[in-house]
Image (cartoon, rainbow, N blue to C red; front, side):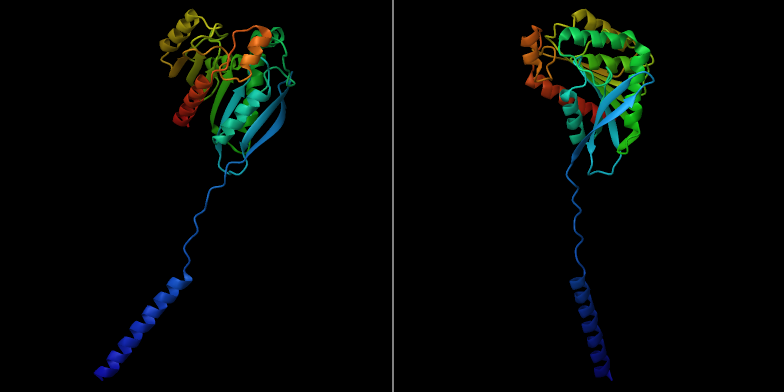
Length: 278
Protein backbone atom coordinates (compact mmCIF):
# COMPACT_ATOMS: atom_id res chain seq x y z
CA UNK A 1 0.00 0.00 0.00
CA UNK A 2 2.80 2.39 0.91
CA UNK A 3 4.48 1.63 -2.42
CA UNK A 4 1.28 2.50 -4.30
CA UNK A 5 0.93 5.81 -2.43
CA UNK A 6 4.56 6.69 -3.12
CA UNK A 7 4.16 5.89 -6.81
CA UNK A 8 1.02 8.04 -7.04
CA UNK A 9 2.74 10.97 -5.33
CA UNK A 10 5.76 10.62 -7.60
CA UNK A 11 3.53 10.61 -10.67
CA UNK A 12 1.71 13.72 -9.45
CA UNK A 13 5.01 15.53 -8.92
CA UNK A 14 6.16 14.63 -12.45
CA UNK A 15 2.87 15.84 -13.95
CA UNK A 16 3.04 19.11 -11.96
CA UNK A 17 6.63 19.85 -13.01
CA UNK A 18 5.83 19.00 -16.62
CA UNK A 19 2.85 21.38 -16.60
CA UNK A 20 4.97 24.17 -15.18
CA UNK A 21 7.68 23.64 -17.77
CA UNK A 22 5.07 23.52 -20.53
CA UNK A 23 3.57 26.78 -19.26
CA UNK A 24 7.00 28.40 -19.22
CA UNK A 25 7.59 27.31 -22.79
CA UNK A 26 4.27 28.74 -24.04
CA UNK A 27 4.58 32.01 -22.11
CA UNK A 28 6.37 34.66 -24.16
CA UNK A 29 7.92 37.71 -22.61
CA UNK A 30 6.02 40.91 -23.36
CA UNK A 31 7.71 43.01 -25.97
CA UNK A 32 8.65 46.51 -24.90
CA UNK A 33 6.62 49.17 -26.68
CA UNK A 34 9.02 51.68 -28.10
CA UNK A 35 7.73 55.24 -28.39
CA UNK A 36 7.48 56.51 -31.93
CA UNK A 37 10.02 59.05 -33.03
CA UNK A 38 8.80 62.62 -33.21
CA UNK A 39 7.57 63.42 -36.70
CA UNK A 40 6.93 67.12 -37.12
CA UNK A 41 4.08 68.10 -39.39
CA UNK A 42 3.75 71.71 -40.45
CA UNK A 43 0.59 73.08 -41.98
CA UNK A 44 -0.47 76.51 -43.15
CA UNK A 45 -3.70 77.84 -41.69
CA UNK A 46 -6.00 80.68 -42.67
CA UNK A 47 -7.89 82.54 -39.96
CA UNK A 48 -9.29 86.03 -39.46
CA UNK A 49 -10.60 88.80 -37.25
CA UNK A 50 -13.73 90.74 -38.18
CA UNK A 51 -11.61 93.00 -40.38
CA UNK A 52 -8.39 91.15 -41.29
CA UNK A 53 -7.50 87.92 -43.08
CA UNK A 54 -4.49 86.21 -41.49
CA UNK A 55 -2.08 83.46 -42.53
CA UNK A 56 -0.40 81.28 -39.94
CA UNK A 57 1.56 78.05 -39.57
CA UNK A 58 1.04 75.23 -37.05
CA UNK A 59 3.69 72.58 -36.26
CA UNK A 60 3.12 69.47 -34.16
CA UNK A 61 4.16 65.84 -33.71
CA UNK A 62 1.82 63.79 -35.85
CA UNK A 63 3.05 60.53 -34.27
CA UNK A 64 1.73 61.46 -30.83
CA UNK A 65 -1.84 61.23 -29.60
CA UNK A 66 -1.11 63.04 -26.34
CA UNK A 67 -2.51 66.51 -25.74
CA UNK A 68 0.36 69.00 -25.59
CA UNK A 69 0.98 72.51 -24.30
CA UNK A 70 0.56 75.14 -27.01
CA UNK A 71 3.01 77.91 -27.87
CA UNK A 72 2.16 81.01 -29.92
CA UNK A 73 5.12 82.60 -31.74
CA UNK A 74 5.03 86.22 -32.92
CA UNK A 75 7.37 87.27 -35.70
CA UNK A 76 9.98 90.03 -35.96
CA UNK A 77 9.08 93.34 -37.57
CA UNK A 78 9.86 91.79 -40.97
CA UNK A 79 6.61 89.82 -40.74
CA UNK A 80 5.59 86.16 -40.77
CA UNK A 81 8.59 84.62 -42.57
CA UNK A 82 10.49 81.32 -42.67
CA UNK A 83 12.42 82.18 -39.51
CA UNK A 84 9.34 82.15 -37.30
CA UNK A 85 8.19 78.90 -38.92
CA UNK A 86 11.55 77.31 -38.15
CA UNK A 87 11.08 78.22 -34.50
CA UNK A 88 7.65 76.58 -34.59
CA UNK A 89 9.24 73.39 -35.95
CA UNK A 90 11.89 73.53 -33.21
CA UNK A 91 9.22 73.74 -30.51
CA UNK A 92 7.30 70.86 -32.10
CA UNK A 93 10.51 68.81 -31.89
CA UNK A 94 10.51 69.52 -28.15
CA UNK A 95 7.01 68.08 -27.82
CA UNK A 96 4.87 71.21 -28.04
CA UNK A 97 2.31 72.30 -30.60
CA UNK A 98 3.42 75.68 -31.90
CA UNK A 99 1.77 78.30 -34.09
CA UNK A 100 3.60 81.05 -35.95
CA UNK A 101 1.06 83.87 -36.02
CA UNK A 102 0.47 86.71 -38.43
CA UNK A 103 0.14 90.16 -36.86
CA UNK A 104 0.19 92.14 -40.13
CA UNK A 105 -2.50 90.37 -42.14
CA UNK A 106 -2.41 88.30 -45.34
CA UNK A 107 1.10 87.11 -44.44
CA UNK A 108 2.44 90.54 -45.36
CA UNK A 109 6.24 90.88 -45.35
CA UNK A 110 8.53 93.91 -45.24
CA UNK A 111 11.60 94.07 -47.47
CA UNK A 112 12.97 97.28 -45.99
CA UNK A 113 13.25 98.61 -42.42
CA UNK A 114 11.09 101.62 -43.29
CA UNK A 115 8.22 99.31 -44.29
CA UNK A 116 8.81 97.06 -41.29
CA UNK A 117 8.62 100.10 -39.00
CA UNK A 118 5.36 101.23 -40.57
CA UNK A 119 3.81 97.78 -40.23
CA UNK A 120 4.89 97.45 -36.59
CA UNK A 121 3.69 100.93 -35.65
CA UNK A 122 0.32 100.32 -37.28
CA UNK A 123 -0.21 97.29 -35.03
CA UNK A 124 0.55 99.16 -31.82
CA UNK A 125 -1.47 102.19 -32.97
CA UNK A 126 -4.62 100.03 -32.88
CA UNK A 127 -4.39 97.86 -29.77
CA UNK A 128 -7.97 96.53 -29.95
CA UNK A 129 -7.25 95.13 -33.43
CA UNK A 130 -3.85 93.84 -32.28
CA UNK A 131 -5.56 91.95 -29.45
CA UNK A 132 -8.15 90.62 -31.88
CA UNK A 133 -5.44 89.27 -34.18
CA UNK A 134 -3.56 87.71 -31.28
CA UNK A 135 -6.71 86.14 -29.86
CA UNK A 136 -7.81 84.81 -33.25
CA UNK A 137 -4.54 82.87 -33.40
CA UNK A 138 -4.84 81.82 -29.78
CA UNK A 139 -8.37 80.48 -30.27
CA UNK A 140 -7.37 78.54 -33.38
CA UNK A 141 -4.38 76.97 -31.65
CA UNK A 142 -6.28 76.04 -28.49
CA UNK A 143 -8.84 74.19 -30.61
CA UNK A 144 -6.20 72.16 -32.47
CA UNK A 145 -6.64 68.42 -32.01
CA UNK A 146 -3.15 68.00 -30.51
CA UNK A 147 -3.46 70.75 -27.88
CA UNK A 148 -4.22 70.77 -24.17
CA UNK A 149 -6.23 74.01 -24.09
CA UNK A 150 -5.37 74.54 -20.41
CA UNK A 151 -1.68 75.00 -21.17
CA UNK A 152 -0.63 77.90 -23.39
CA UNK A 153 2.34 80.23 -23.67
CA UNK A 154 3.52 82.87 -26.14
CA UNK A 155 6.97 83.88 -27.33
CA UNK A 156 8.14 86.60 -29.67
CA UNK A 157 11.18 88.05 -31.38
CA UNK A 158 11.96 91.78 -31.68
CA UNK A 159 8.57 93.35 -32.50
CA UNK A 160 6.99 90.01 -31.59
CA UNK A 161 8.55 90.13 -28.13
CA UNK A 162 6.95 93.51 -27.54
CA UNK A 163 3.64 92.05 -28.72
CA UNK A 164 3.62 89.09 -26.32
CA UNK A 165 4.73 91.24 -23.39
CA UNK A 166 1.98 93.76 -24.19
CA UNK A 167 -0.64 91.00 -24.47
CA UNK A 168 0.45 89.56 -21.13
CA UNK A 169 0.33 93.02 -19.51
CA UNK A 170 -3.17 93.44 -20.94
CA UNK A 171 -4.37 90.44 -18.95
CA UNK A 172 -4.27 87.71 -21.59
CA UNK A 173 -4.72 84.28 -20.02
CA UNK A 174 -1.23 82.88 -20.67
CA UNK A 175 0.86 80.60 -18.49
CA UNK A 176 4.14 82.08 -19.70
CA UNK A 177 5.60 84.56 -22.16
CA UNK A 178 9.15 84.91 -23.44
CA UNK A 179 10.61 87.80 -25.43
CA UNK A 180 13.90 87.79 -27.37
CA UNK A 181 15.78 90.98 -28.37
CA UNK A 182 12.57 92.78 -27.54
CA UNK A 183 11.60 96.34 -26.83
CA UNK A 184 10.47 96.85 -23.24
CA UNK A 185 8.99 100.33 -23.47
CA UNK A 186 5.54 98.97 -24.17
CA UNK A 187 2.08 100.33 -25.06
CA UNK A 188 0.85 98.61 -21.89
CA UNK A 189 3.42 98.43 -19.13
CA UNK A 190 3.36 95.76 -16.38
CA UNK A 191 0.38 96.07 -14.05
CA UNK A 192 -1.79 93.92 -11.81
CA UNK A 193 -3.50 92.31 -14.82
CA UNK A 194 -0.33 90.37 -15.61
CA UNK A 195 -0.87 86.64 -14.95
CA UNK A 196 1.96 84.99 -16.86
CA UNK A 197 5.48 84.00 -15.89
CA UNK A 198 7.82 86.22 -17.91
CA UNK A 199 11.23 85.71 -19.49
CA UNK A 200 13.04 88.51 -21.33
CA UNK A 201 16.27 87.66 -23.16
CA UNK A 202 18.08 90.73 -24.54
CA UNK A 203 21.57 91.56 -25.68
CA UNK A 204 23.69 93.66 -23.35
CA UNK A 205 24.99 95.50 -26.45
CA UNK A 206 21.59 96.04 -28.04
CA UNK A 207 21.61 99.69 -29.16
CA UNK A 208 17.81 99.77 -29.36
CA UNK A 209 17.39 99.12 -25.63
CA UNK A 210 18.45 101.88 -23.27
CA UNK A 211 19.56 101.32 -19.66
CA UNK A 212 16.73 103.64 -18.60
CA UNK A 213 14.13 101.41 -20.28
CA UNK A 214 15.51 98.34 -18.49
CA UNK A 215 15.31 100.14 -15.15
CA UNK A 216 11.75 101.30 -15.83
CA UNK A 217 10.62 97.85 -16.92
CA UNK A 218 12.18 95.90 -14.05
CA UNK A 219 10.93 98.44 -11.49
CA UNK A 220 7.41 98.06 -12.88
CA UNK A 221 7.68 94.27 -12.69
CA UNK A 222 9.04 94.39 -9.14
CA UNK A 223 6.30 96.77 -8.03
CA UNK A 224 3.59 94.17 -8.80
CA UNK A 225 5.56 91.20 -7.50
CA UNK A 226 5.74 89.62 -10.96
CA UNK A 227 7.45 86.28 -11.50
CA UNK A 228 10.02 87.11 -14.14
CA UNK A 229 13.61 86.86 -15.28
CA UNK A 230 15.44 89.52 -17.28
CA UNK A 231 18.65 88.28 -18.89
CA UNK A 232 21.26 90.45 -20.63
CA UNK A 233 23.78 88.50 -22.72
CA UNK A 234 27.24 90.13 -22.81
CA UNK A 235 28.39 91.08 -26.29
CA UNK A 236 25.04 90.30 -27.91
CA UNK A 237 23.44 92.85 -30.21
CA UNK A 238 19.92 93.22 -31.54
CA UNK A 239 18.67 90.21 -33.50
CA UNK A 240 21.14 87.83 -31.84
CA UNK A 241 18.93 84.74 -32.43
CA UNK A 242 18.63 85.23 -36.20
CA UNK A 243 21.32 83.98 -38.56
CA UNK A 244 20.12 86.58 -41.08
CA UNK A 245 20.93 89.42 -38.70
CA UNK A 246 24.49 89.92 -40.00
CA UNK A 247 23.34 90.18 -43.61
CA UNK A 248 20.47 92.52 -42.74
CA UNK A 249 22.78 94.64 -40.61
CA UNK A 250 25.20 95.15 -43.49
CA UNK A 251 22.47 95.60 -46.09
CA UNK A 252 20.59 98.29 -44.16
CA UNK A 253 23.40 99.69 -42.01
CA UNK A 254 21.76 98.59 -38.77
CA UNK A 255 23.44 97.39 -35.53
CA UNK A 256 22.31 93.77 -35.92
CA UNK A 257 24.37 90.63 -35.38
CA UNK A 258 23.86 86.93 -34.82
CA UNK A 259 25.41 85.56 -31.64
CA UNK A 260 25.52 81.77 -31.47
CA UNK A 261 26.25 81.62 -27.74
CA UNK A 262 23.43 83.99 -26.78
CA UNK A 263 21.09 82.19 -29.18
CA UNK A 264 21.80 78.82 -27.57
CA UNK A 265 21.63 80.12 -24.00
CA UNK A 266 18.37 81.99 -24.57
CA UNK A 267 16.81 78.92 -26.21
CA UNK A 268 17.82 76.86 -23.17
CA UNK A 269 16.35 79.53 -20.87
CA UNK A 270 13.07 79.19 -22.76
CA UNK A 271 13.09 75.42 -22.40
CA UNK A 272 13.76 75.76 -18.67
CA UNK A 273 10.81 78.14 -18.32
CA UNK A 274 8.43 75.88 -20.24
CA UNK A 275 9.56 72.82 -18.28
CA UNK A 276 8.86 74.61 -15.01
CA UNK A 277 5.48 76.00 -16.07
CA UNK A 278 4.17 72.85 -17.79
